[in-house]
Amino acid sequence: MLTIEESILIYIGPPIPSRGLFQFGSFVGDIPEFLEPLMQVEEIRELVVDVNHLVEAKKEMNTIGTEKNKAFQYLSNPNNIEAELSKLDYKSFLGKGIYIEGENGELSLVGKNNPLPVAGLSGGGGGSVTVDSITDASDVGKNLLKVADASAARTAIGAGTSNLKVGTTATDAKAGNYAPKVTDISDAGAMGKQIMAAADAAAARTLIGAGTPVSAATTAANGTVKQAAAQANSAATDVAGLVADFNSLLGKLRTAGVLAP
Image (cartoon, rainbow, N blue to C red; front, top):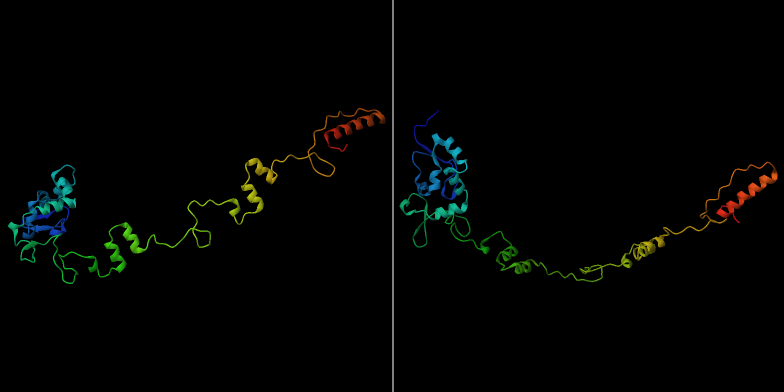
């Protein structure tokens, strides 16, 4: 196993870019002076390890319940980082970070809430940004940013001020409780409208002739007939007997309605 003789430290925790501390940032020898204030935070110190023990440290950091894992989880919450940074004592490290001079000559450490002023940015690096200082915002956009409530926002963009009215012309809107009638259906035929207005199913069937009883058959129209009574096979041995059997058959057919009376 290769052992590095000169001490190299490496930070394996979540990055804190506002203070120049990044994950897996390495330092030969000692911690840089501008990072020394951060070493006041116990969780940050826990995650600065010797590079010779990096593998073991990363394994421990990924193991739930270990001190390094607890430290990593704690620093992964931006609110915790902000809280810890607000408690740091920078007085004993004056000159070891980046400071800017305030209006009254006081020194303040550069950080997230006190960024380094950069030339060319409207409002200055540490100043507040106002709506009117946003150079690429339109007047409508600026007005929206200044509104006091939702009602004022709608007014600013003309929402809810339509001149559309409820009526019966082609350009009017229908009322919310509009209930069309059968007669309002412009492309429905007369029969279709009668069917839609039928009181019940029976009335609808009557309109279209469904289920209407068929009349008895006549010589001029189709109709219903009954089944004729049975007629035994003729066993006549002479013409008179044959005529009698045939007339009997004709009688039964007339009774059934197959033949006209």
